[in-house]
Image (cartoon, rainbow, N blue to C red; front, top):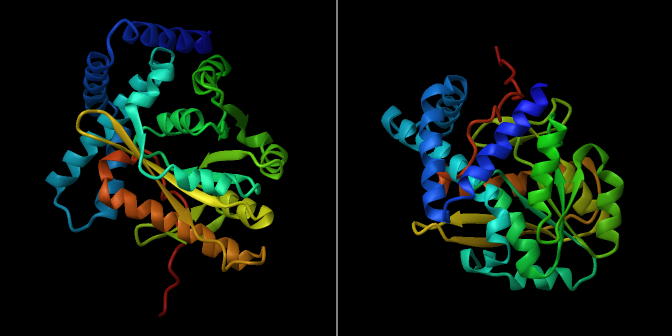
Length: 296
């Protein structure tokens, strides 16, 4: 019963915002995010703590301003995601690419391509637009939602323009198949990872980090790109693609996996420092941190 109620509420909200043009719908998203900032105490607390620990040079007033914008970014992201059926192929007017040729260049190598990003900007729009505008549909590795009805609805939106979704828990064979046939795999790797994962420096703390992107890149020799979607003041977007160098990492081994994971994590941090309000600080990213050994 709970799953049906959640599904009904999500569907009701999607249908409601679909009645509005894009900009008024975004204002609804901002309004809902401002309400969420007030009442979702636990998430607000996590966001403020994460920001304060990552930007010790900023005042608490500055931190709270960024925190509120973080919630607003999530609200706008949800509304735009809800409107994917309405946006559809109009996406070319909304999203522009600074250097899409880099993706074309790597795809033409025939080794497959790994597209990596984080929960940054409108990460759903990033994948939605990239697969369609580039002409190379993405195989997106996703975390399955606990509510199967909501999960099905979300994935229906993700695949409207030809992308494919693969549940993370069943993804290894599918990722290898896609890369070996020259396809494009898209994944996010910026959330909290198990303690058994590799520990990487992220905002001056050694934190457990998913090593999947590095493992697949080194095993298959597929190029690794990161894509960052920046929201402009007029609510259009620019996607910037960056290559993560792997040419000097010939062998697949534990050390090279750590080096490559550190490289893409450092680039993510660089963009987050430029645009802190665009990253999803509401998550307990530093749940598994390496404890420093005492020298005494």
